[in-house]
Image (cartoon, rainbow, N blue to C red; front, side, top):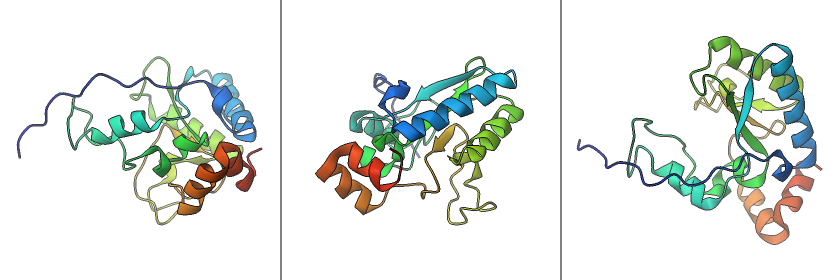
Length: 171
């Protein structure tokens, strides 16, 4: 197998919580408060994701690489809850993705406490038995499956984000 070329220039990341569905934003703020209360320094790394950003991330491990390997299984922003303002990635401000296991444990515990789904539970051993891709920084609204359905795509196309948020009771 030949070596992949270097990654192109980074596509900007959106980390503003105000672009999230209102009830989801409230829950994310509570998770951040929990992590802070436990002495951690959480950083919201990414919120609403553009299609351009999703395409860039999907290229890792497929079209180019910088040592990260495959970053995502979702080819377009329609394939991830990030594209709907219903998912965020939270990392440790000091250690980034190399946070200690206890940081991830508190993130997951807090996410579940506030009714969110944690990507670290996608291991086939918890409540989402059909998921096997572990994504520790990822939290998303409610008990939704890992990826949006075709109905979510249609709702977004016909009524925008608010239509999707309404359908999943995130308003």
